[in-house]
Amino acid sequence: MTRRLWGRASSGNVQKALWALDELALPYEHIEAGGAHGIVGEERYRAMNPNGLVPTLEEDGFILWESNAILRYLANAYGGVLALPATPRERALVDQWLDWQATAFTPAMRDAFLQLVRVAPEKRDASVIEASRSASERCADLLDRHLANTPYVAGETFGIADIAVGCAAHRWLILPLPCEERPNIVAWRDRLAQRSASSSVLTLPLT
Image (cartoon, rainbow, N blue to C red):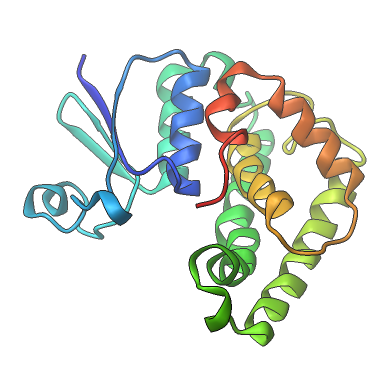
């Protein structure tokens, strides 16, 4: 089987797919794309992903984009350590946290990340950073309170919800920005960091 993952490793969304592929020990070729690597604007890439975004998974002619869709596909197709729960309600909780990461947590911190990592200091907008910080703190508080009562995001076992939310939480925790202490998030992130497959993600600096 030919399997390729397109997308720069510095992208939080690409990191989800890299982590999942490594958890499953699936062989794949990683092709850096997006940002300084280019490629995403080329016709051949747009033929796969008309959004011109990353990641894109290519598997024997099957093309899939959207990072959380890729996580769900890998969990459904290959199971293993990423196998989805058995019952509809348990699976719904996985979906709940995947959607929350994509629609709440990551969007909340996006402006702070861009301003502090991608914008030159003299061009930063303090009001934009503060608004993003405040929104992110609300999400972090919600997650920290949730993790006080469960070892993993969607229940008792590790799964794709931990990958999606874990990539976002790691980015939040290492942003050069004062934030509230979140002991439950830190303890959970430390558990995730013990997984060998997480090393390609949880050791990366922000770029």
